[in-house]
Image 1: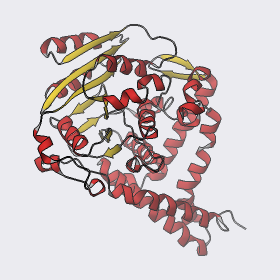
Image 2 (image 1 turned 30 degrees about the vertical axis):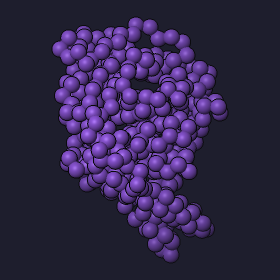
Image 3 (image 1 turned 180 degrees about the vertical axis):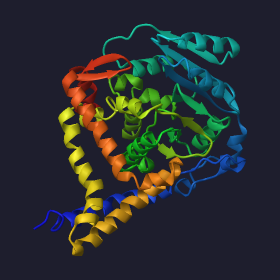
Image 4 (image 1 turned 90 degrees about the vertical axis):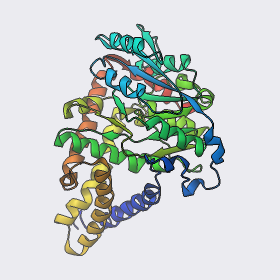
Length: 406
């Protein structure tokens, strides 16, 4: 009997039916933060009856502290700070920028902007204590000096549209959200980079399910480094970044802790809100993947590499089965392909990547698998991870991956 007959087509079809219907309802319900003034008072159907009274919006909005960690970001940090100082927000904003051991002109750019705008508060770090990842330590130091009622953790290369913070805060206050994370517009300038970016974020959506984070009885959680808005009291209650000192997936794990402690979390989307050029080239993204995926596998390179086998079958199986499978089974593979491509089409459309990317999904999958296998092999050889030019041994990293932190 051929491998493409028997139980395989049934298993793949059932798998995609589960993935499709587990994700679709909440994907359709993701709140959209519109730029119209009326959106400030819009109540999503899931939060009906939970919104604050309109007269509370007449009060001045809570103070927001934007906290950014920047290392060797001289070429981009100026644009980010300019977009933040141009925010049209009906409340106070302070911008805490942490220069994390930069070897370029990042510190000079930050200091120059601070002289132009008193809302910018520079923090300069020259030393990384043991037991910390650099970015996590920098964000923690920034949060310590921040005094806003809400903290917005953001990356150093994010561009904020003029009303981004106002729209986010209006939604968070109206719906009493403790943690709001917004998907940024992703800029990718080459076909291969678009393929890898689309497939990476597609997997994040399907299997981390940030769109289901609002459901209290699920383990789904959300967190995106480009825009993590959290109530200060909640950040303190979960243990601050001290609870995730050695997590390279600090943005996602921060969201996981917030959800675990029972606070209200929401993932949203928005047009003309924030945008980021995640990586300049495909090579840069492959380099970035050297640290990104391993935390999800308790820093086991073997587990990471082996996980690519079921992923290859999940995505590649329906496509190959449709081409080479026995005739009576092709309709099962075909249905699985329709379910898979329907979800991927919506995702590519949201990213505003070219439509031909949909037809190149198999290539995107292979790029993704190559990146993850490469990350596992390099990590195994090194015995740890290199992030921001600093080496971290697995024995050290596993401290924050122990069961009590999960």
